[in-house]
Image (tube, rainbow, N blue to C red; front, side, top):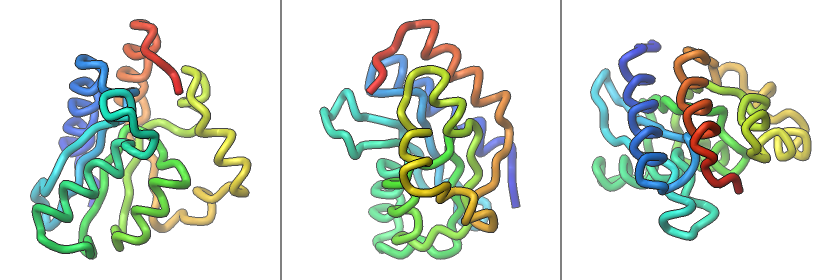
Length: 155
């Protein structure tokens, strides 16, 4: 069940990442049974690793915290619609529900290529309506606008 405070934590993670120039405005939180298991943000720039998206970062942390590769029963809150790579990791980890704020179109507005990949993979997110649910877009757009205003690096 969706809880706004968890999306607020994902936004806070995104702000940490952009403050320290770790990467774009992408933060994520994994929750199980109403408890935060892990939080993380995009570290593509910090790690010089194109795969270090917020969702990947938080999945790695949650799996270590729970000492398992199976995140069944977990929910993921993220500031943006997962890209194909992140969605693949989410599915492999058995995360059952993803709440995201900004769409691929919103990411495209500030210069990110998410929409390109959405088109390339045939509208993958629309095929997973039971897994993906957009919530609190306005809250997440604020951090996108902050990143754009500071002229953060787009990759």
